[in-house]
Image 1: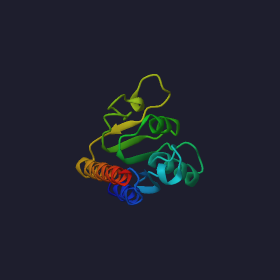
Image 2: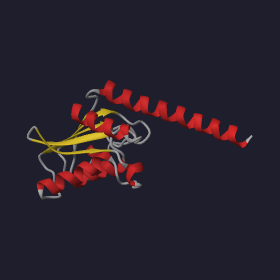
Image 3: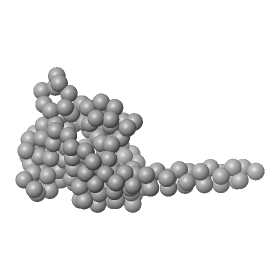
Image 4: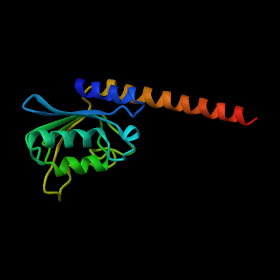
Amino acid sequence: MREALRQARKAYALGESPIGCVIVREDRIVARGYNRRTTDHNTLAHAEAIAIRRACKKEGDWRLEGCRMYVTLEPCPMCAGALLQCRMDEVIIGCMSPKSGCAGSVVNLLEMDGFNHKVQVRTGVLQEECAELMTRFFRELRARLKNEKAIDKEGLR
């Protein structure tokens, strides 16, 4: 999870939501990813999607059976779906996302009956560090947007 946090800090430095992840096979990192939606102007450029794409390329297969993902924030519906599709064994989550998380917060797509695969879910790994990074980012973003709005209002007078 510490490496996933390092990836999240890369996103933070770009002004992106600080979400990072790594994919591990047999205690070896096979892929890394961090959020790049704003940078790439691409709604699909989530940390998990980037890491899955890189892992599939490196492993030479769309199936990532035998792999675990460490991610700083609970996956969204799109990323939870990708985890099911690539047959990930387990996802280890730093902090939960109560408004959009699909590994237990809103719904748990990863362990839902009816799909042809289930992904084991473990939560709360380095939770405080992951949550603090998200909280700090959004606090700074709100302050910056408030400041920009105030400057715009002054400029209109």
